[in-house]
Image (tube, helix red, strand yellow):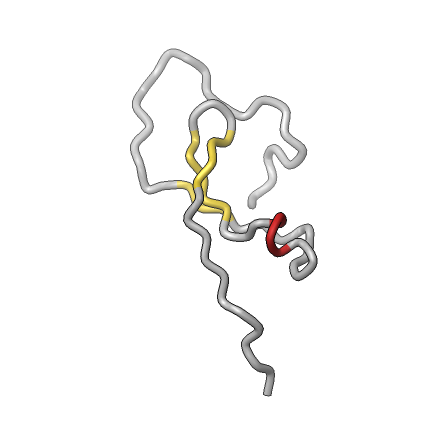
Length: 68
């Protein structure tokens, strides 16, 4: 039977684009030697985004359009 290596918790949020507060569960600064560089787990929300005439988004992004 395999044993649990560690439990990692992260509660630091950062802005993606010009609005979206995101919680990135895995920090590659801390866990880069342990995890695959292609493993992403981010959390957005809950929250409300008020209607606006201003366009929002992340502009050019390396994995824009991918489900992550």
